[in-house]
Length: 387
Ligand SMILES: NC(=O)c1ccc[n+]([C@@H]2O[C@H](COP(=O)([O-])OP(=O)(O)OC[C@H]3O[C@@H](n4cnc5c(N)ncnc54)[C@H](O)[C@@H]3O)[C@@H](O)[C@H]2O)c1
Image 1 (tube, rainbow, N blue to C red):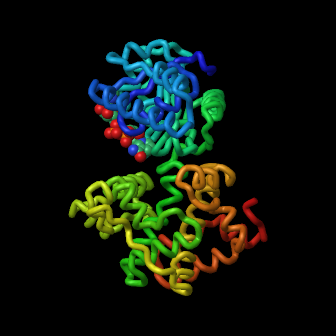
Image 2 (image 1 turned 30 degrees about the vertical axis):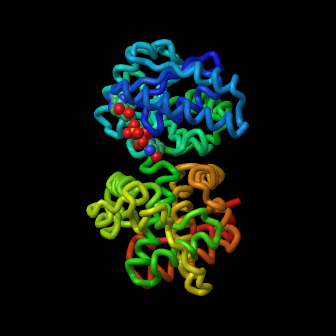
């Protein structure tokens, strides 16, 4: 897969336009297709503004900008993608629509082409099942904004061949990305491991232990760029709630992933976050989320509880071989900007500390969400560290 390979990107929305930018910057002639031609026009317009800014900031020269933009070709018909060696799909998150597209694509592309999906929540295996050759279908999960966030989760479906995983991984490295490999399981790495950052923060607030600015300030005080509530407002409470629900359902209603009524009410009331001017915080007239003073003992309690839940989730992902310890930590630092890898963080205080925190929560509440991962117990028993 060298620069001469043509790349197709399908879906010219938020993700598709960002992925097309990344591919074109890496030197590939990139075809951008959308069923709505105006979406392609909008994407090209947005990209030209982006390149203008990059030139102004001195990140690239005008010549480079012109060359990159020249490599992004609007496609008005899917057939124009026939010569592509890699096609990345970033269309609407609906299994039926994606499967129909993959069936059409397979008929169009040569047998050595790779078909990738940027799905956040659907099974790669289920999408691949639409193809006669599912072994060349793979998940390439970019993060928003794709040109800025380095992480790409590389997800083989059940029958994807190791050779395709290797090809995709090498290509992502060439594109300057940080690829991690993970099993085709709900939420992949990031959207699974990050769930307690939001869920436990909401729970702490529901219990009346602290208000939202205090919880946000506590998490910022240990290096998170944003607290859970301000981050949910940025992501959009509708999007965050949809991801939480989809992970919960995909895990056959495992109670540890149960969504919260608090979040549902936010969505029902239209308090979607920054984009609607009101979420957990109010954003009218340029207002920003209020930050509380960090309160020592209370902050420590909040941080310990949320971190213990995050570390437990990361440990369980490792226990179930979703990804390696290295890749789990890379995913959280490069995909969602965590200040430190969770497993490395776990090592700092030692597994015994985190097991004690979780066992106390489990004993206090008797709820399955606080169930410690069997691997955490094993680490303590064997006196081991993750790294
Ligand atoms: N937005 C994110 O933060 C994010 C992050 C990672 C992954 N994803 C995933 O990326 C995909 C796209 O998300 P998005 O936020 O860019 O969506 P979006 O709504 O911004 O864009 C989707 C585009 O796909 C087009 N489209 C719909 N059906 C099509 C079809 N059959 N053929 C061609 N084009 C079609 C739509 O017209 C639209 O322009 C989804 O699978 C989503 O789960 C999104």
